[in-house]
Length: 194
Image (tube, rainbow, N blue to C red; front, side):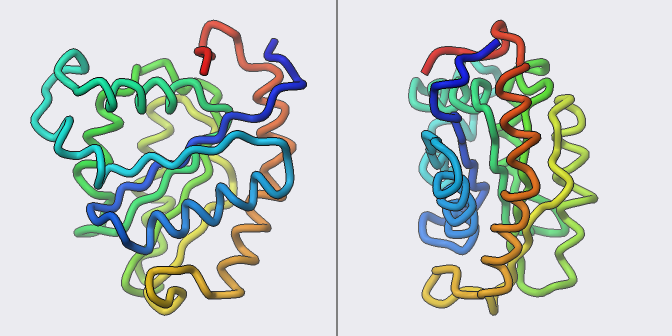
């Protein structure tokens, strides 16, 4: 059992290849919504910043220390918010490569809220056809409702759409009972110390 009194450890991962883009803004808005509703310690991991430290790595032993720390944060999260821009009908290669280093059984039962951004509404199926199977491989608990936002939902790389903000609130609200239950029940051998 985990300590019910401690804050939830919530890690967002942005698969965007650019430091200032729509995807980290969407993931950050989701992290903020969780923190507004429950006691949570949040962290955003951006592959744009970490990419040069692991892009050429073939094994986890090859990654830089800051990437290893990010991987440990991902593996010990009570909730993972995983987001990527749509790139050639899928998530970005660096997003996938980061998760190539995550231990195969380290996300078992971990709730994952899926998020994605794209040029238009036609890309929204990335949530179901790309992201959900990836986290299914890890035996993670992909939450029923994900969040997708398109170019028109942002201004100056900030989320401005009231509809998307409502979807974020709805996704978090519907998921919190599952997240809190998972945090209480998750075996301690899967939870590293922060």
